[in-house]
Length: 589
Image 1 (cartoon, rainbow, N blue to C red):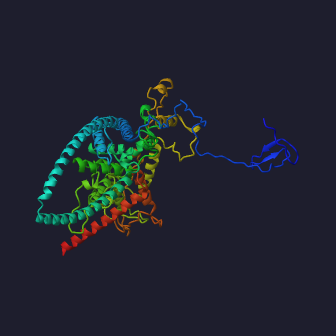
Image 2: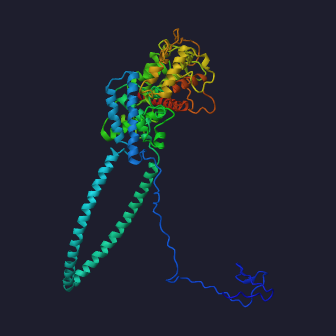
């Protein structure tokens, strides 16, 4: 081993290399002079260099699988399952309605047929058994692909043979070309190119129009269509009632829904659907199947009328007219507390107004056009029949009573107003009808808007009503095995469910008729005043507001909406009366 050199300055033999600068220094820090440091950096290693090979481990990487729940149905299968749930709810609704109203067994058959037609008339009808259909289609495509591959091989062989023959023919044809024929072919090619360019432009315009149409369809396709909502099952029930001439109104269905007697609200939370079906529902389908509020009268009538129109236009099935007599009597007696005299007068006004009795206004014949500018349809022709009859009855009441703060007194005993009660007694009777209807409603005292009810103040009858309402609202049909009834039976009180119908709650004393007077006051029909539907200025009389509010609550529409119907009918009656006077004046001259 060669001896170490001494430091010329301090004589130390301990040397080290500084890592930062690469210089050689002794233990005292003296730098070694005349030292050359060369770094040999090789880009490529030689054949004898040592290399370490990294061995791959035998572990397999975890596949990035989806975290989606395989039990949930999506796509066509989920859509098919959604309508299966709706169909089961419809069957439960039919059973409940048949038991409540005592309907015949043919009602279920009618609803079943209308439901099948409704599904076929949807903008995007549900597929039939989509899972099996996809399997069959997949097998057919696989078989078709195999046949296409075999056919492609045969076509390639045929093309190769034909190409050789064409080359030989072209060589012989070039030798026999005619100059005149070449000129004709050139002219023909020029005309064809011009026509093809125009066709291409037309195709471009058609393509743009189609693309715009597809964009509109995609925009409309976002979200679930209103005809696919749970309210469509109630529309099927309404069309079936119209077909069987059952005098039911849209408000009858909404009342049963609000009382939880007709399965509609929160069917999944109330266990109306079996768990085996709920298991495959996505959160969007669960939300769509769980409405928290009953549909309005206008929404139900709109769905039912559109379904009736589509049945007529697509299949030629005509929905019969409404059973107008019982519906009109219910409006007059139950909603407005009227008499048979008011029924007859309302019937006459409805005839003057030409109120359509069909479910959709286009199914009724058009109006008579005596002149070219006469309309074929009237506004508010597509309202529910009970709303139209209520508007006509209010027009009659305004003719008789005025309802503008000024009294009307008939001067002749033969006046029809003598057959109606006095205005003060009539309004008092309406208030009693409201109070009786509020008392007869099972959930009236349990309404969330009332905070003055204490559970300790309930008697046995009210407690029975509360327990029955809670059973319907909370568990519905969830006690399928009858465990609650078997182990915790509830004894019904004698007064359970003895609510009085609002239509039967009449005053204990007879209403007195209007007295004939000789005073110079306005007679019935004089000084008729038409109010705006939106009473912004507050000019509406109190009596008219009470009658309008009572009719709006009974029919299930807004006060402004019913006020608009009444205003339209009033102006229509004024035009009719002016026409009658004009024709009588022209005939007398």
